[in-house]
Length: 268
Ligand code: ADP
Ligand code: MG
Image (cartoon, rainbow, N blue to C red; front, side, top):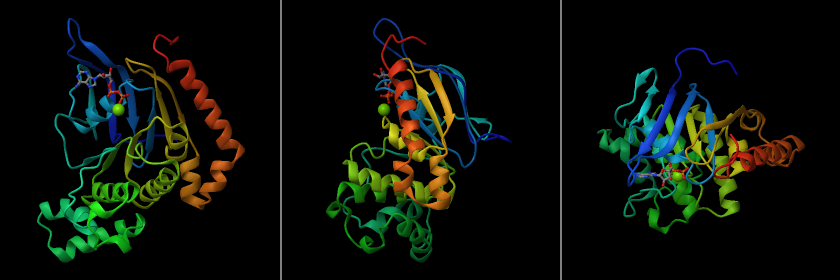
């Protein structure tokens, strides 16, 4: 894919070090990454490779030690509603029902009830929550709660979704369902997204591009386009795509890259 114009998100020579005991602890080293509007970048890497640090830098929570992070060409210095974060453990308001949770960011912005309803209804449809709209969220399963978390992140219409292993705590079947929901949300809104995952299949199924980080400190060791998300978005057939020979080959290839770079001290 050719990237034209200013990228939505960009890391340039991004290095992040945390204060350690005697010396700083490097988490990310010299990351160069451009994310164009509408791209869905899946970042995979072993535990401790700086994946969360990378998202936190894009969110504006963690400043670069050197290099820079930019949103639409402007250095990121603080969090913004333009860049919504979704975590593995969502922070829903348990005493509110589904629609109230999803619409909460809009209430904070002062939208009246009718306009809040109008704005969130398409999100409830895409996330399969319409029949649950009036239920208190504490009565829902983990998978349903994560749907609420995704819908709420999109309610304020951010430019960018930053997803830190949002499906990591779910069982395999629920996880596949939610991957489909995430794909449908991306296909219907064409948001720019950066997804952190340690799941090879998830990265290939959702990412239009897959980026692989080495073990700590994280460096980019591979980056490639992945066709499957666009295929499913255009023509459906998620099951068929997952079962295809091409998907199987891509999985084996990515597993191989990770095996070569995931281990601390592995060759660069
Ligand atoms: P990942 O999400 O890939 O597991 P993280 O970005 O959470 O990796 O962490 C990368 C490295 O930085 C790890 O070694 C972690 O222990 C360390 N780290 C993360 N956050 C902090 C922090 N706030 N202070 C000190 N060290 C941290
Ligand atoms: Mg993490």
